[in-house]
Image 1: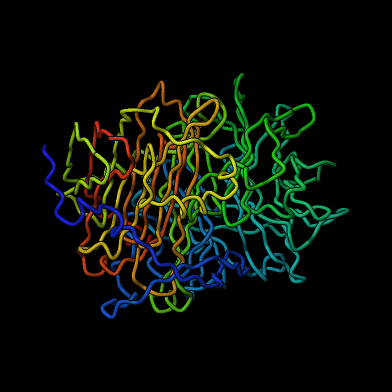
Image 2 (image 1 turned 90 degrees about the horizontal axis):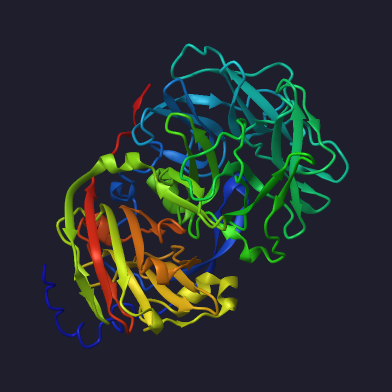
Length: 590
């Protein structure tokens, strides 16, 4: 198909007007998990007198996980049991701000359509009376599910408790009971901070037949994943050394520990025999994001040994470079894969959330595996999300010269799935890479935004754009050449995403290595869901989850474009887009 000509003045000044930014910065406190306040940079824009109220159903997602109302944060204890997927989550049944947290519970047969149930865990015993926080599910020998979670006891110490299903023959496992011997693990021992001791992992059983879990902790002022052992999952003993610890930070939340095979997108059950060549991943939540290390599990010494140790935690690998936190993975025995979930919070104000009556969603569940070179995790939306696709639009053989915009028509731009393969015509045009950019990729995405011409890039997508481009979000690549390799930058720039005041609108970004001489193409997949923009670059090498609140979404009229603003022409060898129909997410109550 031939592209329509770009009207004046865009053809002469393609991005000077489109992406011209005037930023007014201020500090704003946004709520974080467990009630902690975090200061983040907020970019404000002059308010349009025509901006409609944020209290609109237009911002509720159509196919991401969220309850019908109220506050949600961490995903908890995901598992597959007897043909049913279970998703538990931190939930406030009484309002749309953090507090009064219980374990919400929903079930599904496809991870997309969900039935909501009554809360599974509430704080009503001495070991969790002041809070029932994050935890994990484990399937014990004999097909016995168990949940281990953090409670805040009468002294507000963080302790570890378990619950068991009341009736295992109930396919939904609606009711859970607390043994009288809770708490099973208390914050005792030298150097342990009783207020920083939480979020136990899924258990795994070693070759010796003994169960193990890790608990996030502050130990002697540093971060640690403490290791505990048990023969029966009831009586636990702390090992005299952590699974792993680091002096680069002082506390890890929501640790996760699992095995992966390089180049294989099938998952591994950590309690099963781990094949030769497998690697292990230790994931932790800190600095308002999820980071991870790849290494080996030394069974003899019961220790995780990372392949690379970086003292500067800004250089640690990240699960997602956007609004994504407190992720939890599980092994899906139904399809032999590992799936990871993450929480994404609202980036409007607390008063907005109160007015809306809801806050927080979960990202689309992702299959997660290890790249063939063993250096990075890859993630991709689970295949089940494709069942929501409708009205496919397809284009091949497009050429995008410097300044070109190609409008993608024929899909619902508010709920869409877009997949593009960009083919580079001249990799020699790549600009040189500066390693210092790795220390602050968001700063680099702000400075080298979509209006700044490069050799290779920026090229990518403009989504949720208003008629006059006053509002738009860009998701784009830049390609750089370092001494030995090519580095690709994926940015998701929200700074012009909305005319509303008081929003947190950063420019997210993440780098990944890429063998351009072999691959030649760079893929981008973006899931658009009203107030959610979730992107996967380079086959899932870099992922960015973002939240946006364009006034145009409420008005129901947005546009979507492929673009190139680099000096070199970029070919679009394949572009496919689909409308995404609404999923049945917690509409029914079981």
